[in-house]
Length: 313
Length: 284
Ligand SMILES: Cc1ncc(C[n+]2csc(CCOP(=O)(O)OP(=O)(O)O)c2C)c(N)n1
Ligand SMILES: [Mg+2]
Image (cartoon, rainbow over all chains, first blue to last red; front, side):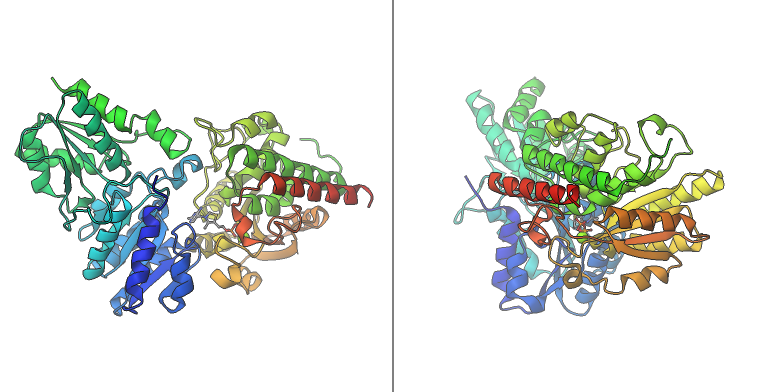
């Protein structure tokens, strides 16, 4: 049972690079505790900026610092970072092309009991719609580290969403295949599959478990860990769709404008196949801890496997 | 609605008792924002049981007063007060708070009786109240519009846009309260984002500002009464409070208690502190 949430992996990665690179800056909006960034703030006070409960200010200040040569990582709950600061992200970050990395913490329905104000089920749609904004939802802590290391090397805007709770490992310290902006394939892409499951973020683990359940039933599934929702790894999507009869997408997001929409567009244009999109409902999400909420909406291994069985001829 | 005689002592005791309801909700659900709940309770009790013309019997009357809990994370106190006011059963909210499928979510939700607007994302309450106050004034309604904000919340730019508009339109039917407990999640407000000149700042936006003791119901009563006499300007009451007030030394004025869930032992200590305060009141 993994105890390290992805947010903590981000903090540790940034800390290991911040020693050498004094331009790495962490910015928080009364959110350093929930971002697991307290150790960074304590160790690198000169590279830390607190703006108080002011997410719009947070993003614009980050953009200003980036313009003057700093490398800001700004942390706030994904719900506020993506929609409260939306215009700042659009204009000051993406449009002005500043090197700001927006880190949305406690994403999706991590704050299960706190209601719609605290869910970020619109962030993929909102951020994806901005030109020059990349959107990443890493699945486990090992992939999170690789992603952050890769982002540290470029100078372009990006939005990263991670959840609040630790997620079960999918990869390991020495076995975490990662290529920037390429989906990680769990299973085989080259042979023939019955179903291709495309998932991102916290939904990758249940997708991989669903593949195992399906295998028992003699159904062959390939899983794409599409941590790079934008730029979507179109090549992998088309290849996976071609290899299978059915495509299923799974995401912790509203049913519109997220991973499912992006995948469906590619499949429809290049190799029309049936695409089933699994997501949160277009409704107020039921109150409860995220695990119970996922179960309720069938966003778990059994639910995904069931959808596959139901939709395979 | 018939106005009852103001009785500071009785309301203070009620306020201490309602903190126990908050505690039960948090113990039962394993979540909540206890520090801000305890600091704001006296403000809510004064508003609901002394000042505001709001109750289950008149929620459909456009001439009632209006209230928005802008610091929505203090929802446990809000629920406890609404239940005491008769909007729903105290037992029900304690049992169902934050449970799977519950309507008693961890932030105010207007599918519940008594709640005007949803909140939880900080910095929305004041601008929405400006809209309500404008609408009430336009329709010559007698009702007043109230909101309670946190002091950390004041870092949101939208709050100051609300102050600006309230001042600009001279909304004397609008009263904003700041729960000035000087703490937020990451530390003191002065460390995180200072409001050292809060009084002058708000005044400069065209508001009448009253500073008072926010954990003293008699003082709060006075401030709200005074607010009603102010002409042509909105009023902001800076209520100086103690975060965690009433819960005793273990939790008072401690940033970590923003959303700490008490252990069984701490629960006992808090109950003891509340009872001791109550005894003190009774023998005053
Ligand atoms: C827009 C927004 N940003 C961040 C949060 C997360 N948050 C909840 S409570 C809180 C601290 C509030 O401090 P303060 O306003 O002083 O409230 P109090 O001390 O009365 O609890 C924060 C940052 C939020 N609810 N809304
Ligand atoms: Mg405060």
